[in-house]
Amino acid sequence: MTATTGPHKPAQPAPLTWSAAEPRRFERDQREITAAFPDLVYDAEGAGSWNGILPLWPFERPQPAHLTDWTGTTGLHVLMVYRQAYPMAPPHIFPLDPVPEPAAWTQSRWHVNGDRTLCLLRADSLWTGRESVVDLLLKAAAWKVEYALMKHEAITQMSDRGIVED
Image (cartoon, rainbow, N blue to C red; front, side, top):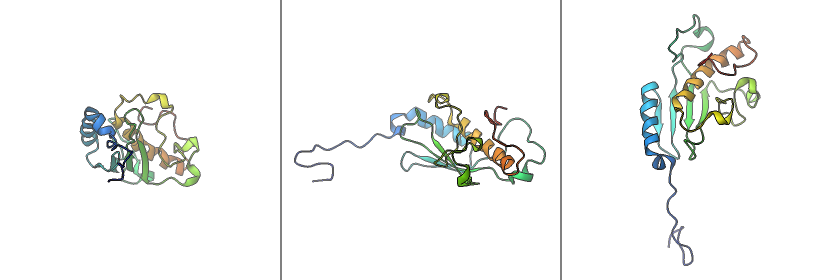
């Protein structure tokens, strides 16, 4: 007898992961993320995650002069964790370096949620499940720039749309 069977209990099928249920989306994410952010490393444990350092300025427009004066020379170190509800629910993105101070969590001006994940969408409805997760990672890269501006009191709150678009 196993833990999932018994005299009155039939064997339960193994839970289906999001990547097994959505193999085309899984392949798309693998392709898009490795093309845009080759330094991120995939880990298949659980629902899956990506870990690594994003580029400091991954945008097509010119990097501002003296950007590294406040940000340093490396981009944001992130852990992007898929949820089993993905792609209908966006992944969680945790900043690992820098780590925002607990006082910044849940203050909307810092764009950090109470669980220390980055708040990268102004409304839940902005994520439909069809978007590219690369767009969220670009916003996370830009978050580090705005975080540095906040820490140096150059701005009083992060922008609503983010520097990816503004």
